[in-house]
Amino acid sequence: MNEILKQRIVGAIVITALAAIFVPMLFDDPVSDADSFSNELSLPQQPANNTDELLKSIPKTSREVLSRPKPAQIDLQAQTIKETIKKTNFKSFIIQVGSFSQQANANEFRNKLRRQKFSAYVDSISNKDGKLYRLRVGPELGKKIAQKTQKRLESLYKVQTLLVEE
Image (cartoon, rainbow, N blue to C red; front, side, top):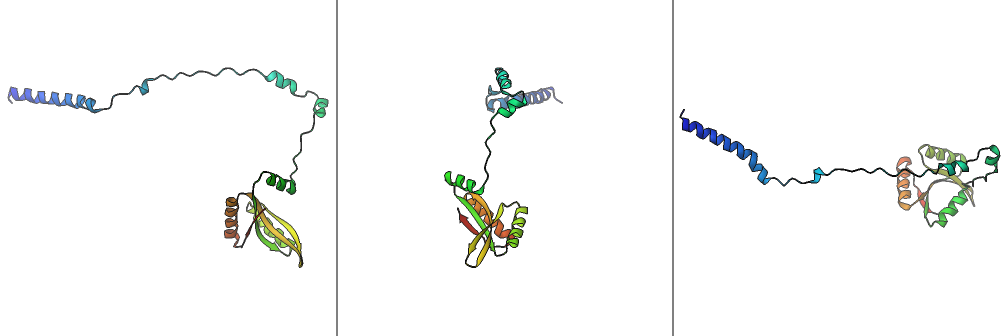
């Protein structure tokens, strides 16, 4: 092969290689300094040692324990819960699942609902025909939640329910 042709081919290869290396550098974004920062961590200050005061307040004898006042007990009566709900201006909703003339039937259905994790209870009312036992679920704090529970009850048990605001 001709010597001049060899030099031209080698020169073309060298120029192409240099172009492949340096041309992309012209079109790339400039290198940011975001990756070159150093992260300095500072340790928090040591907490104050207040355990001495806490240890002094712990009773050491049974006499000291018994002399302490008793904590207030929470009264979980239904009437107290209803009064609390009324004081906080929340609207509570009850879903009435059914009315039964026999208490045993109402209790049996209540137990079935409780096994499905519904908060069911039976209350009784008197009317001209005698005593009725109402099976109810709730209370729910919020109409949307109550309606969701109502739809779930109706689809699971194929019953007609009644949503009551209390």
